[in-house]
Amino acid sequence: MKKTTIALILISVVCVSLMIRVQFAKSSPKTIFVPDDYRTIHEAIGNATAGDTVFVKKGTYQEQTLEINKPLTLLGEDVNETTINFNPPLVNVTFPNQTIMVHSTAISIRASTVRLSSFTINLPDDNYACIDGLSAIGDRIDIIGNILGRGCNLNLNGTLLSVAENSMRSGLQVYGYNQTIARNLIHGLISQGTCNRIVENIVNGSFSLRGYFNLVVGNSFSTMYLEDSDSNFISNNTFRCLWIGINRLGCSYNTICKNRVTGPDNWGILMGTGSYNIFHDNLISNYTGGYGIAVGGNNLVAEHNVFYRNILMNNGWHVSANWEILGPGNYWDNGKEGNYWDDYTGIDSNNDGMGDAPYVVEGCKWDDAAGGIVGFVFGHDDYPLMSPFDIDSVSIELPEWASALLNLSIEPQAPEPFPITRVVAIPASVVALSVGLIVYFKKRKR
Image (tube, rainbow, N blue to C red; front, side, top):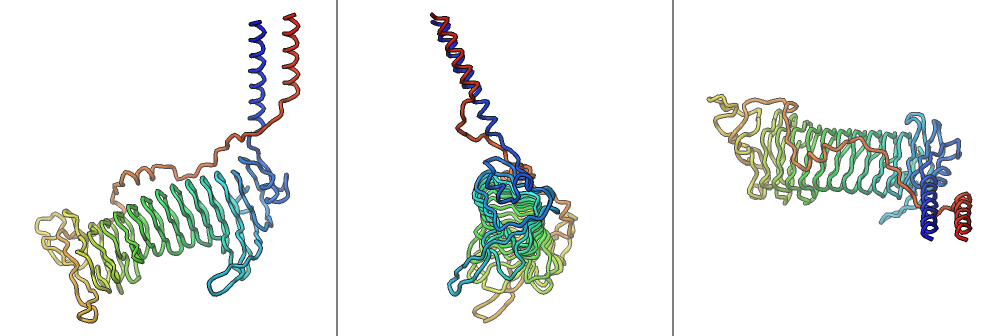
């Protein structure tokens, strides 16, 4: 009896083991080839299962729209020779005063763990706009190494998103947490979220940032708007103008350092509204018809901000404003070092690299009583630097949270395939083996 029981248990174990092996064999991801397996990309996506790869060979493909609603990798053979021409249907979009016709979204992603890579993507070359070239909502979405044509703007929302190595003739909007935006050519960027890394992008237009603990390093853009943003680290960028705390959306505890801020423009840095921001080791130059640094704004308060080790050269006014100044003021040194002002005329008798006399930070402001612009003293730099320096040689100490973000690999990783649970039939051979063993042991028992 015991031997029979043990044998039946062993039979059950063998059957379950074989079922599990069959299960994983059945659920392993596969690669679908276009046009070999399916003539169109749309058909291939529709017949793919979660975790599959749709590999599109070189060629030009005509598609109306693509919808991805499952974990999937959509991979082109060669970005320069794998082209998708979209022709999305026209839809009505109603505004308060009018209704217009536009193209619907070309690529819609409504899933997590999706990768789109190595395609040239074009929208219709007509007079109609497009709602979105690509719209994605989900987590762990990678948009890597694509060429996106005119009007093909990207609108992404989720966590752990990666947008890297793309060339885009339109804009990029990203919303969410823990995202990587790296080494793209973009025409306009909007980022709203927390713990995002925005690294080494060329933005041919404006860059709007809203959020907390974001790392912005090594980018080039014309104008940056920082709104409702605290504790961001903005370093080693090249730009013409930085607006901080506009539209009454204050910004505090941000670090802006080692940036090249170069005119011409009305001003290089507008510290509009906010407090306890730190500006150091920036080169602010060539605002000959304007201000290197502008402070405040109409009914805006900028206070307790610290400026030190900045180089201010060839500006009409190094610091100034066009409005009434509110708040107790800001600091023009950190208690040990000040800034380099190219119009400072003091001497350094002890050769410590700092002037013996303070530099008076003087500019102009609006005065209601005078009914116009008047001269104004913004404060004093008690440790003015005697000579400029090369900001590229400066070593910057990152805050702990920024170091953790920077140490992550900015190379996005391909999505990990995962097992898919399916109901599978037990193979007939397994059933026959089980029945045979049971019959055998029953005969032995007799």
